[in-house]
Length: 89
Image 1 (cartoon, rainbow, N blue to C red):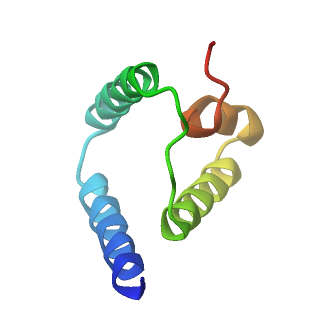
Image 2 (cartoon, rainbow, N blue to C red; image 1 turned 120 degrees about the vertical axis):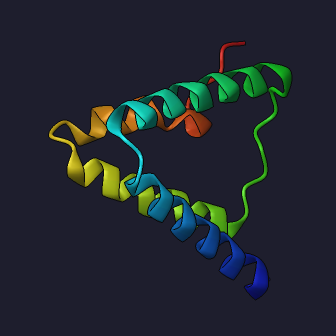
């Protein structure tokens, strides 16, 4: 369990470091691609995914950081948190 948590933290840190080297345009395009992939996966697998405690922690930290950066933080958070949004039936 500890090894899994440490590996998730390390992967997140690597993502954060590599993300700083990308241009804003590259980041925006990557986000659009990831959102589209997520919507496809949500359509193919309508059941909610199982999320480990480490993944929940990473999501909570990133969501808190995002909401504190944006002027309309709550609105932005609702837009980007696709995993917790309602799926159409």
